[in-house]
Every structure is written in structure tokens, then in C-alpha cells.
Amino acid sequence: MVNLPSDIGNQALDAIMWPITLGDIEDGSDEGRIIVRAYRNCLMQLLRAAHWNFARKTAPLTLLADASGNTAGVGTVVPNPWFIYEYAYPEDCAKVRFLPWNLANQASLVPAGNIQIPQTPLLTGIGQVALGQRIRPAKFSVETDFNYPVPGGSISWEVQGISPQGRTVICTNVRFATCVYTAIMLYPSVWDPLFRAAFVAYLASEIAGPIWTRKDTKLGMRIRDEQLLIVKQKVQEARLVDGNEGVFSSDIAVDWMQTRRSGGSAGRWSVGGGGWDGGDGVYGYGWDQMPLAGGSAF
Image (cartoon, rainbow, N blue to C red; front, side, top):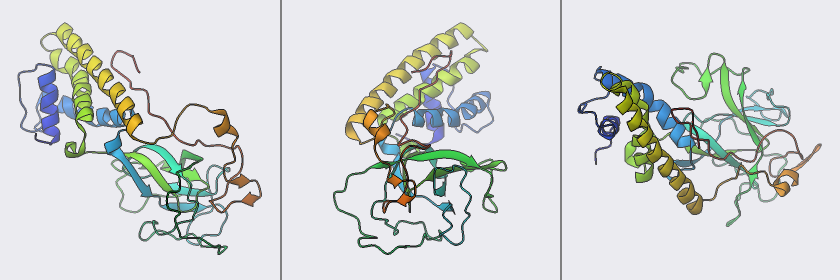
């Protein structure tokens, strides 16, 4: 199986029964231009529609601000007053799933060249990870901040999370925060078969109308609806399979999660990163509803 975007595009053309094979989806043909316009948006929406196991990534976040003023070299303005730390949104993030508490204040995973949060006060066990420790989600909030300009040389139209109007950030009370998220997986060679089948069908449903409208609009709409049924089936299956195989946060409101302590109370910061009861933010995000042509979603 060949794993280039052009191969995915040709599979989508096959799915809508269009009698043309493209050598490259960027060859300038009408079919290629239609596929290119739909490709990226279909990929992002499908990645956000389920917690795909192959797309799960865990990575340390880059610190932008410390509202306590204890970290030299970074700002002190955090847009959400309920939180202490502000981190840059990962450039390859399609959707944040959750932020685990860093109960041991582990600093070894901080990206190279990133500002180091001071290891004070010095406490027993700092930098040591308890083996077998369960993952606890911490409250966080994804927001836009206008206070810190993007790095020089960044192409704001192409890089995820940055623009001339501000940058996407993650606010939390976790020191040395690590983020668990769905990564933007551009290469079909790492997609699992279920995702690939769903993506081909989703792309096919988006291009069926524009391509077939030149010959038979009604046939194009019927093909689109048939492909949407395939998308729905594959995504629902993925939600069940990945949910059974992985450990994920829930978007269902649960009483004990709403009332439990989030790491301390106002004026009394905990070793795990600090925080207080209540306040803004979430413990994690569930998957998005899947928008489909014709106005339906699931």
C-alpha cells in the first residue's frame, strides 16, 4: 500500500466512482484542486472526532509565563487569573486531551533551551518519579494570549497556534507541565486501517458534490450520502475500540470530579503544582462531534 497524500486522494476518487487517476493532487487539475481544498480540514476534523490511539502523543510544554514571578526570563502576565503558569500550545496538536499532575515536580522533560522553573523550596523527592503512580488529570484552560509575540521567523499562516493577533496557550497550575494530546499525523504510513478508511470516506463525501456537479449532481449527492454512512460507522467503531484500549479523560460531568480538591486551596499551594478548589478550566476534553455535509453531526 502506497502512503502518499496523492494515494489517499485517488482512493477518494475511486470511492466516488470518478474515472480519473491523479499522479499528484497538486498537478493543477480540477480534481486535484478540489481534493487539496478539502484534505487538511477533513484530516483535522477526523483526528478530533475520536481519541485515536495511533495519534496519542505525550510531550513537555514550553513555558511562556509564571504569574508568581519566581521564574526569571519569562513573563508574569497569565490571561486566566485562576492559573499560575502559561505554556505555548504544541504546534502539532490537533486536540488537547488532558494534562497530568506532575506530582514529583519532574524537570528532566523540559524541552532543550526552555526556561527552567526554580526548584524551590527544596523538598524531598523532587525529580523522582514514583513507579506505578496513576495518572491524575489537572485543571487547564486553552486560550488566546496577546501578550507574548511569536518567535522571529515564524510563518504565522502555517504554524499551528500562532498568528499576528496572538497565540494559543495552555494555562494551568502544573509545574513542568506535560501535555497528552492528539497529534496532527500527516503521514498515512502511521495511520491505522480504521482511520484510513474513515478518512478516505470523509474526503470522498466532501469532493463528491463539487466533482460530480459537472455531470450528474444527483448522483454526486447520493454518493456523498453513502460515503457519510461509512464515515459514521468507522468513527463510532473507533470511539469504542480506542476507548476500550486506552485510558482517557471523560467529558461527562461527575459529581466527585467537580468537588474534589485540585491541588490545594487559595493561599496554600501544593507540592504537585498548586491550585485551588473551583475556578476556571477543565480536567480534560472528550472527542468532538463529527460535522457532516448536509448539516448533520454525530
